[in-house]
Image (cartoon, rainbow, N blue to C red; front, side, top):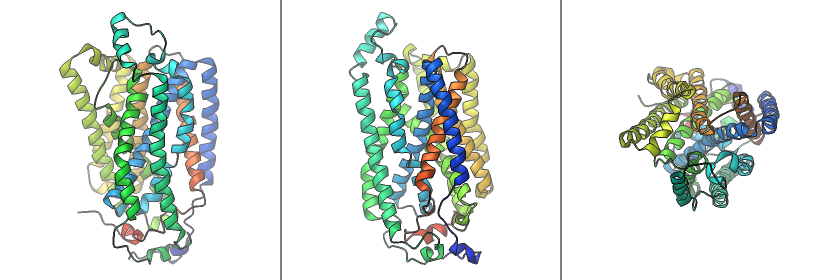
Length: 418
């Protein structure tokens, strides 16, 4: 049992309010939406690509959070129970993302060459594209995307609903001490049905993420293919979801939840960010190494485009943001116990994930207008602000900790391995 350092902390109100966060996120969403709507009027093609980069960015983080939640239930992880409500907040934006996909559905011909009736390509390229149009065609593309969201929404909805049902029998949100006095369950952190459901849904959820990466991003160049691309997209979103989770945990520590979310939890998050930063770098390196070794013209052009002109500097910035800086900051053990530093590293990784989506999308756009950077900024502001607002509204008035989980006391008492 964890002793509470402040007597009044036990009776503190753990319900989320977030008035300032809501106001700031809503203002950002309104400002970004106004700029994006203007962009669709004056520079439609540029804005569609900007919107796709922002959409795949926020989607990767939500999907990374969903996979982490599924894995946590499957393995019966106790240490992460104290962070479960925050993790559920990350994935709560999936219904909104399903709605936000509609502009992409209406802009297929602006984004994807294979959606055009007569692409201006040489004959040999058109022949290759013709063979792939059984898969790359608008009706099948939209049907697949609907299937992806159906799987993701099913998994997120049921896990969140079951988690709320467990909390319904818990003490009131302002009684943390009563929640800690509950006896631990014998079968671990997750209820049996959540564990079995997560084990069954984890493969289809992961496959849906992989094929969504193929459809939304890799098919921007329909003649280029990489079997590692889906894992690459997953790895980036997975580590970025830890970055957002670390930011939320640091934010929660500013209130009564500070007695529950402790330095060892940030150390665990730091270890995960370090491990999957290395995994992302592994995927990125081996993808380019294998393509360079094969040296096939239809494969190497993907990297030639991104290593010339202004995109060359973007490639260097991506490597620094996604690997060099977080790797060397997270490598020592002691700094990972500092919540403020881990939150800063998490925010840096999230920024790196957007640079990654920019690196994937912008070169496929080809010639861009003089205000393209403005439309990219407005789109990420609009979608990011909308998702933060939506998630905050869904969490508002609810406890930031899963007080109904009988293993909560063990999660709070977690100690980092030496």
